[in-house]
Amino acid sequence: MSKLQGKVAVITGANSGIGLATAKLFLEEGAKVVLSGRRETALVKATKDLNGEFITVVADVAKESDNKKLIEETVNTYGKIDVLFLNAGIAPVAPTNEITAEHYNEVFDINVKGPILATKEAIPHINDGGSILFTNSIVHQKGFDGFGVYSASKGALRAYSRVLTSELKDRGIRVNSIAPGPIETPIYGKMNLPGEVVEEMGKSFAQTVPLGRFGKSEEIASTALFLASEDASFINGVELEVDGGLSQI
Image (cartoon, one colour):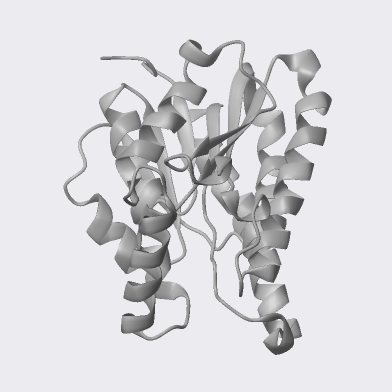
């Protein structure tokens, strides 16, 4: 299997969940992969059993300097970029009457500012005909209580991706988004909620999904591979829901 043979892929939020699953799959498909995350210890642990050609870069997507560092280290090592997968994100819960400036800034810095700045730094180094992918979410299509700022951040990212699709059309760079539904990832442990609340929320989510279950990180990874490869050569500017049908009911 070599759908990405010789391609260079950059993945943010790659030390766990969707990012790590995608890195593993991309490596299996022949890509050279740059895995990025905020915590060095997590990156070391996540990559100790990986096979293939890869490097890790410790970078916080909320910081402009770290986005520059990520792209610079990628280019210094591999000289080019074929796939930019901007996957890092957070989803802390806060009802509208409890939203603070700190909460807003944290979510938008990581979920919106980070991908936009990383894209800006990467564009000069992305090969014509390359691919940019965003991890979005179905939350901006449906109203989930407590996710107002998170939903707004994902709506903003979707709007940005539409503009980017047009701006990069002359270079043949495709821009697509993946909108997962409830997926079994560590993000649910980062919502600032008690474990039993997260567990009950998970059960409730699963019951609303037509397929009756959470998705798996590997299922999102397979979608990312499809969109990044020549199999999706005429797919551009879309947001592909991978949610077991949740967004359609």
